[in-house]
Image (cartoon, rainbow, N blue to C red; front, side, top):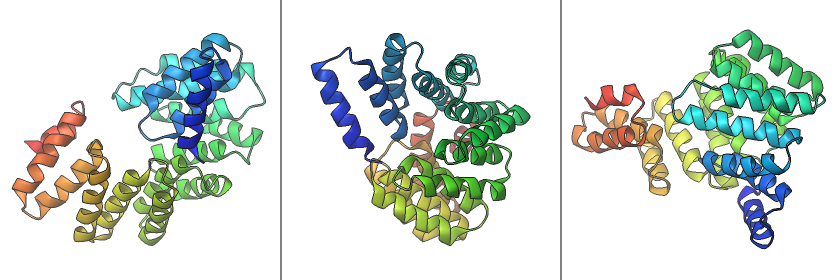
Length: 274
């Protein structure tokens, strides 16, 4: 779970040997596990894929990184990402990883039955894989079956409790099922883990408190999150919507404007700003 330290070591290796393909792969995976480092992950994994064309792990993480970049840009054409993931599944038919990643991509594409099948394949191949358990949870999440998503997400975190990237989805599922106390406990754990997830942990705390009815606590958590990272459009929207509800319009306006500036393709932000 020490992803920042790992990335620094891989960068040091690459400074002395820029052609070390395995270091590019591992650095790409470390970036993938960070918050908001999808572009860097994709860049490193493309370099690795050129030198390791038959490596299933490289192909799987590259496919998933491409998918996440496209999701971030609000695009729905996941053809290249799916091609890499299916290549990974062919290269290593015993690996749960490409099936787990495919499950999320297919779920995001609205191909829910195919997504469930891929998630089941991943679990059958390796039920002790955090990736496989996470995939099962995310297919339920995309189907708005949040109560069913909680268990596999919890198992994913229990299998690798030091991986901060696994926590936000579990916190969201607990929040959306009204299990606010548990969600807040995981927010505390995520904040303690750090690794660049401190702001996200506070943002998740803010949304949990907001849903639980603690408006002032939520406003404080959102402000604390933005003090660490001013680039989270969703947190800006969360804070602005609360201030708006409190008739604090002059305070809400700059946060709506910031949310729009950060995510101009999100129509809901434009509606709130108007």
